[in-house]
Image (cartoon, rainbow over all chains, first blue to last red; front, side):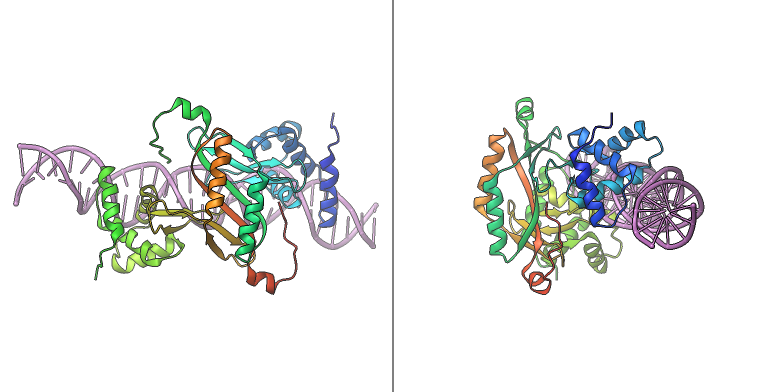
Length: 156
Length: 156
DNA sequence: TTGATAACGATAATCATTATCAATAAGGTG
DNA sequence: CACCTTATTGATAATGATTATCGTTATCAA
């Protein structure tokens, strides 16, 4: 077991560069996130890691997910007041936007380079030097369009 | 005093259509938001309204700001874990996106129809029927680019 | 090996927002 | 107008994810 993951080394280099220490917990959080392969809540990761490392604390998982985001290996998805979701990036610099169904909560990713270029252009026109962005498009997914014919969307 | 604002009537119609009651508090919240003419926090609106209506409660301001959003007369801006900001829309259906300076917090609005169209197209390709979206572009504004020459910001 | 201290685990604190609930008032009805 | 139903209010407690705190533990450079 304990298959080596290429991200472990990247993370290690990041920790070195920041003069931060390497710990079992940090590796476990990274491995759990990569293994999940999806948008995952802190709770789910916490419970998963607890089976291998029963002593780990919730705050440690939170702290180290934030650290992974700083390292560029993970990304936080935060929508409104909902709890944060985290996901591992396939590569540093990987990026995508989100389509969110307001009816069933389905979350779909997309990437469109035309859109990226256009945003770059718009920011430049306003004198901004853009670093990153967050685009969420809300609507009804295909399934919910079929199932529901009312359009009286109500969010609360 | 009490200059009539055209939004009062629109809001009244909305309340009628939803079989909700017209109250002094609802009008005051709407008027305060329109008068502020900017992105305003609940606290600021609450304190402002309190000078004219000392008995109003914080929860009432919160509730009615949400209601104004439902009516289409206002919009909520929520970034990360920060407290919500609200702004009056000039017209129902008015929409814009945001450029946010990660250094000084400057918030700038923009609207680009090409961008809107492209998003519509992308959503349709994925089978989504889009209702609204939220785009935030983070980076350095012009002033902060001049002041700061370090580029130690993380890109994702 | 060891000392300084970063990181940990457990838990309390934070803080914007939401829920609760008794009192009030909107607005329809007679 | 007086009455009644109940939506809305104001005050405050509850919520809940996240962050801060703090004593203990573990990393790692010397």
